[in-house]
Image (cartoon, rainbow, N blue to C red; front, top):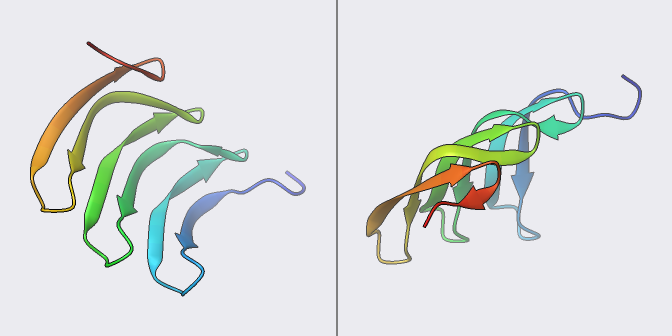
Length: 78
């Protein structure tokens, strides 16, 4: 698949710190991803299906307080 991201990738902030990591399938985020704040603490973790957020995600504020958020077809469930 010429030019498309495949497999596990890591994305970094401009200063080299880890921003996000997770798998791509045919160029789309697909599977479990983890996002980080600039200082390295977790920001969000959850699953993508064909580049769309899906299912239960865990998110943390900058103080480390965790909450769970349900996503359905890329839309935050009320």
